[in-house]
Length: 141
Length: 141
DNA sequence: CCGATGCTTTACGTTAACGTCAAGCACCTC
DNA sequence: GAGGTGCTTGACGTTAACGTAAAGCATCGG
Image (cartoon, rainbow over all chains, first blue to last red; front, side, top):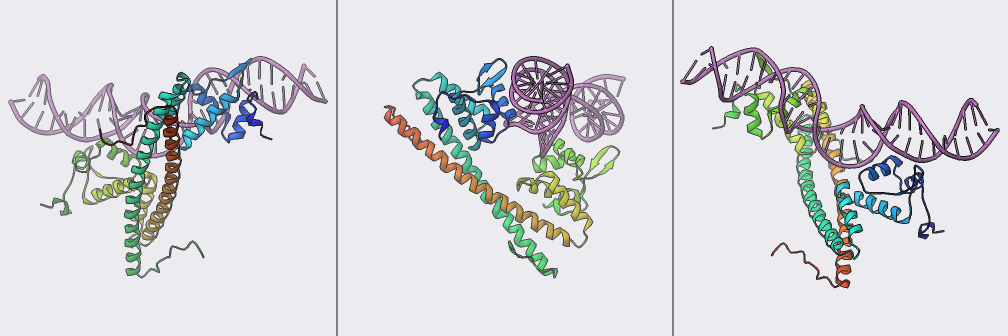
């Protein structure tokens, strides 16, 4: 029922791709960038439980807006740092920096929305003066 | 004092570039995409007051996050629509759509920030348990 | 007449994260 | 053994908005 908890399971590239909703091409691309390094059986890629966990970290990092280059740095640290001490500090620093970036972005967005609302009002007023019926915000009709 | 109010003034490409803080290359690029069409004196580009106004619209649109393709659509409408009726409606629609996009982006950002804050907390707790002194948020030091 | 600007066009380079063929094994089935 | 499926590598294509030369005309001061 929870086959993912089995640490001995092996996965093909299409299995992982389908499970996580990415293309096999993307997974190979991550490998080409040094973020993954699965075993081989002949020429075929064979992923184990740890590889799968790394892929999860990659996808989560992407979802949070980190670049692959940054994710790679973090994963490298993860490998090179058995106690995960420097890794923790780096992760914390990265998270905090990303939070600041996002908060800055949000401020920009708020300002832009304000400006766009002014444009919206100017449009509506100009249309009223031109005798055009002002279309409402209407999600209905 | 307000030389920009003189409708007969002409501008070189570098004048406009310096005034608005963009490169001449960018202005030529906008022209290559059909957003501008200045007169020529020989081979040199000569911009009049209306060209300058169009450039202002382009830059404002960019600042608000619209693509050059979209800005071009709007400018084309502006030209083909002497009463500016369809133009007003299109501008209004574009502004409203962009507002929705931005509000959606802001929701995403808020969710991402939440998730990052959780990671931050997990880092801090793991570091405490590992006996590492937790670095504060410190904008100081 | 020389060199320095200033402007022109043309065309390739850049960034990120893949998409999209193309060609080729290896294995299975019938 | 012909065909189909799954996997591989390699290489070029994509998007947006320019940046960065390269090469050349034109004008101006001296």
